[in-house]
Amino acid sequence: MSGLGAHFATTAAPLGWVVFCDNLELKWLRILRPGFRHCFVVLNDGRHWIAIDPLAPLLEVTVPPVPASYDLPGWFASQEYTVVAAPVRRSLRQPAPWGPFTCVETCKRVLGLHDCLLVTPWQLFRHLTRAGENKVTNTPPLPLTA
Image 1 (cartoon, rainbow, N blue to C red):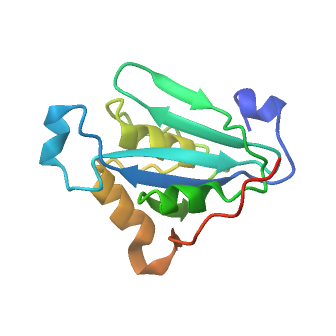
Image 2: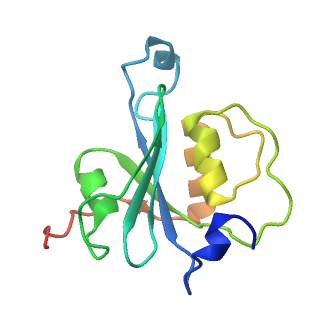
């Protein structure tokens, strides 16, 4: 493994979820399928939640102030977002193909997904849910505990 992750490797790969939502702030995104105009990734490494949200003006990386045991994907689902569990592939050796810096490309890079034909959030959703491979979260969240 190379990169910064090799220096801070944990025993288990982080678990990932892609969160799909509308983004009506950018008018040009209205051409995309409603509910699938934007996406971002949340990861759980067993100690923390990490949210990676590629916004138009910046890439926002945050550690939400909730314990790792909190059902963050369930909370997003309760807020009417579509949430899909997604494997995080860390064993890749080939560089990812070139792609424009979009929310979909960011999610693909975080997950280790090297499919250059996935360019919209809807395409990414369909890829992740093909044949029921990954669970779509729609369960109520666990209560927030400190």
